[in-house]
Length: 123
Image 1 (cartoon, rainbow, N blue to C red):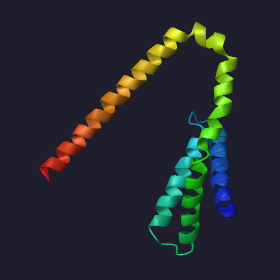
Image 2 (tube, helix red, strand yellow):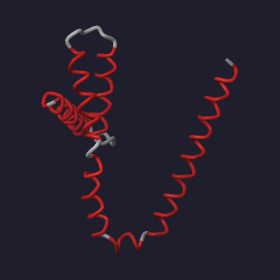
Image 3 (spheres, rainbow, N blue to C red):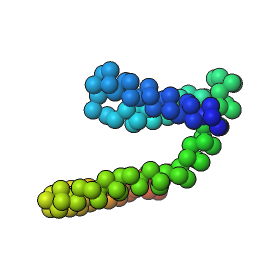
Image 4 (tube, one colour):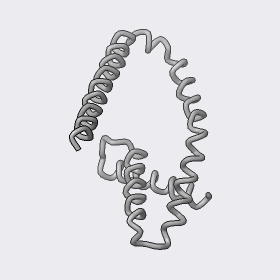
């Protein structure tokens, strides 16, 4: 489990370094997550026999860490409460963004769902 945590954190560090070095607008942890996805996809090809136990260990550790993910939102909630007056000033803009984001997500999801179901119906 320690090796898997080290690999996860090392890939997050790689993402941070790439983001800072190339001055990308994508957050470093997202780049690290994409690196992790690429690494897991490459190890899934079973070209390297030694990576299979590490791959399984990383997946198991990630699933265990997801159980504690809600604890990471506590500091964010406290930070939001500390800036309530700023939120009150921007309330209308925030509501518009939330509504637009929700509606566009629902429309996009229903469009993709309809395309997938239509494709499966024709097969």
